[in-house]
Length: 240
Image (cartoon, rainbow, N blue to C red; front, side, top):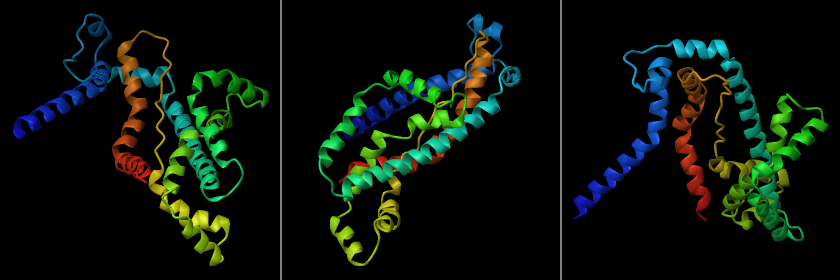
């Protein structure tokens, strides 16, 4: 009975993995296919044809787009982590009135769809004359309620007695945060992944698939090399 259950489990997992991998494999096949073959319904190329990749780089500056996405992604993630750490530390270790109310109000903002804020953020960035700039893309995403929540849950595992002992030992507020708290919650840092999208206005599906494969490569590599730290952070932050 146990052997049958194991076989069924592995069968379901293999099926789920195939479903998850199908879009990537399908895009990869399209990226090497000729447009005429795609329109004719022949999605499996007979040979590797890199014409779509060449056309994708010639039609759009993909490397420039990827560089912009990398700059915005790295700076946004780093600054978001810093602000979330500081906010979570204040909520957990610094006593002030209505602390729970403030935290609940912050959590309530998570129910607001991001689409609702698009126009407001655009008008704000435009009024600050930051359109088509890196700071205009980075500033709207600096405050992460989810990041604050995640860090707070992890910091709650740190006993308050440790804070009291550090105060008695003469450790400053920032020293306790930087030397003790931050290293202890480092595994809670969740890697921010941004899908790079190609805004093609043509109907060459092979070239679009090639562009999608190129722009998604950094994300796939980031997931592959960072999945262990991502899993550690999620599980550690959930256990109190």
